[in-house]
Image (cartoon, rainbow, N blue to C red; front, side, top):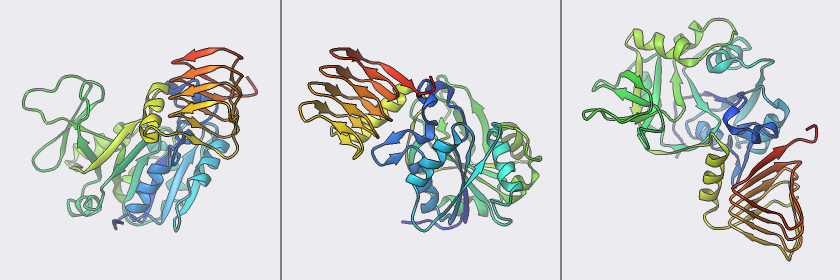
Amino acid sequence: MTARGFEVAMVLAAGRGQRMQPLTSVLPKPALPMPDGPVIASALRLAATAGARRIVVNACHLADRMADAVAEAGVDGVEIKLSFEEQLMGTAGGLATARDRGMLGTEGSVLVINGDCVLSLDLRRFADHHSANNHLVTLALLPHLDPEKWSRVELDADGLVTGFNPPGRPEAIEVPLLYPGVMAVHREALDSLPGATPGDVPTALWNRARSRGKLGGLVVAGHWREVGTPADYLDVMLLRLAGTSMIHPSAANNSAAKIENSFIGRRAVVSEGAVVEDSVIAEGAVIAEKATVRRSVLLGDVRAGPGEVVVNGVRAATKAD
């Protein structure tokens, strides 16, 4: 079901993805492949189901590869524009840059979604809640999955955010909430951002809204998975594969190879007698004859040599390396 209320959305996809190294030497984190399209595809679909008819995606790190991923993940009936940044602007700076370029329109709130996670949220009440309460910023929130792993958001009975806590055990009376990277930004808050200069959201948006009692939150239904590190990426991939394998049409898979619960992506080569289990092999990676690869990610101009055994490995490189 499609929600209404956000005509314009921005999906954030410009970061370097330092924790995802070395994979992000080959592809930006939001461009990493998944069974149903690149990682960013879920954010684009979420924006479309929330009513957006224009989606702006910012890009900086490996911008051409990010543009390719956006094109691959295109959503029918939605205009998608790229906002290229010559330097990393941060979330607030990226928003201001797109605003100053006239890409975010002039009216209404903007839905902002992190493009480096896999998520599906029910936002049917979100726009109405944001508008009815006249919040400058409203955060979509989920019941917390692991308070000791991710930061916690506190929400009072009036639906106002009262605090952000670092990862750790919650107090006995605390109801910990998780911010999955989705927020509504009122036009007043968007217009108040300084000119297109680097800046982060807590300083430029959240703290200002909170000081005025206009930083809201709404608990929504849905799911979210972090794709922050190579281990996270592999876990999410295996969850989405659900015990099956997927082989891209451009991959060269020898009929005598054994592939189980794995993703064999673009231009990958799996040779005769090779065994690939619970792994991601993509972007031209080669698995040589009789090599064994388990619970590993090989991306780009890398290989597992003849007869080599790779377990819990992460290899990635571009041809320039």
